[in-house]
Amino acid sequence: SYELTQTPSVSVSPGQTARITCSGQTLPKKYISWYQQRSGQAPVLVIFDDNKRRSEIPARFSASTSGTMATLTISGAQVEDEGDYYCSSADSSGNYRQFGGGTKLTVL
Amino acid sequence: QVQLVESGGGVVQPGKSLRLSCAASGFTFSRYGMHWVRQAPGKGLEWVAFIWYDGNHKYYADSMKGRFTISRDDSRNTLYLQMNSLRGEDTAVYFCARDIAPPDSGSYVDSWGQGTLVTVS
Image (cartoon, rainbow over all chains, first blue to last red; front, side, top):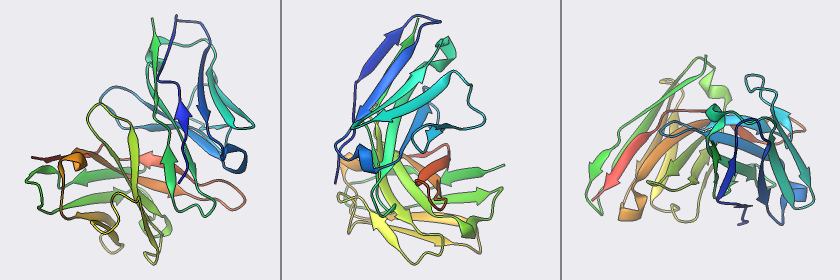
């Protein structure tokens, strides 16, 4: 198995840039996806294949990877962006999944 | 529009069994692999199991292997999770989710149900 490590919490003021990181030794070999989960709701796909934004997701969301670190960036964060964010990747076979521990984003 | 609706959750005693269902609509169910993912109260997401589009291959997280069984009935567009020998630590909201695995790309979950709560007590 492999681990994905996320910072537990990030806090920004509205309009600021929020950066949420996900680290893992196997990241260079795996695609990362990112999910947003608002309070009491199901997760929603935000980013797939490291940096591809889902069409329904606002353009202020972007992502990148470098070595063993993946970063989700929210440029000009809004109050509605508050929630928990999870990174995830599959193993090389694509059959097993792993989620990071999640990062709670607060925008206030 | 993809829709996934879980059902079958509830309160169950330790050691007992429960079967969850996930009714799929809005897409050709038989063409997609499907996952179960769970979330304990106040905790993060935990992957549970995955079944191929054709049902021929199934994969489980280590802590669920031997106790949980994922299956599907394409004639009913329904995904199942049979959970046996339930423990307190299995208390969680269980989500079903659709897998996307394009060629030359990564695999990821693109759609989630709203979840069903299982309480083992």
